[in-house]
Length: 220
Image (cartoon, rainbow, N blue to C red; front, top):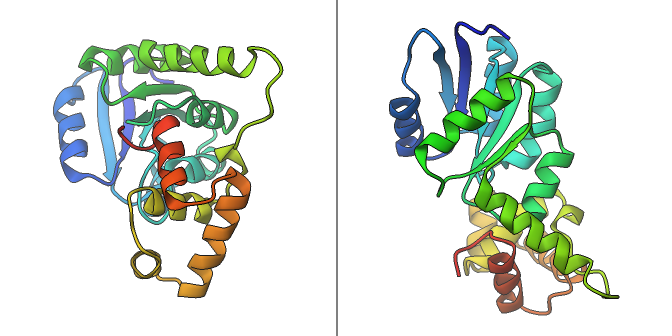
């Protein structure tokens, strides 16, 4: 990577977040924002063309989530460092992001200086996980290894579409609303919900919402 000017690309579906990141990071002799997008699928194409040094990637986005976009980014820009920048601090998200090839993981609730630390670390080739996310990861690992326990539901077992449906169910959307949002049939939504309840061992939307809160997908 060029140590003089680091080229950064932003992927977040919220326009205000992307504007805030541009303002926070700024353009200078050591860093340049080369592009941004609110659509992960479109971002993959641009990243492949621009070949930035670092990609800041949100997780929850309509259409294609950051977790599902990550392997695609790795394919089109294998040398790019990818930092997940998200509100999701649940250890399941962190573990999955790292397995998929993320170089860093930073909570949006972190202090602004944390993002610069993460960028500096990954540009040196070192991984970076912000302290509050690390604390949650440690708690999750300890809970999983504390005595003989039955394996719990895993978000990693979900398909990309099931994750989208899971998020919408968790925030209280009806089957009709989910079908309209994702532009799929009502029958397909019902099938996805059946799969979610089976894979996550949840018998109702309320249980799915509680699991979402526990994993950091929603605020409690």
